[in-house]
Image (cartoon, rainbow, N blue to C red):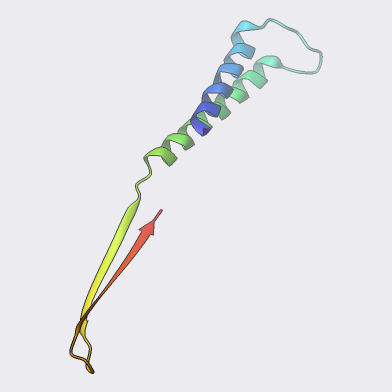
Length: 82
């Protein structure tokens, strides 16, 4: 979703900079367009980083012998590092 938002911000900013020729008193439409384009690039890059972020899983297995019964006990712990 963030990548789509980044693309949308970039496109809206590009339209404001290059497609519109409107003069609004007290507002620089071109600067707003450049700001939106910059924000779009940043949001898109954050979306890419989040997409390609690695997810690692750590599995630990421990085996012991119960002193009372003499049975072998195996314990497995799994941890997800996001």
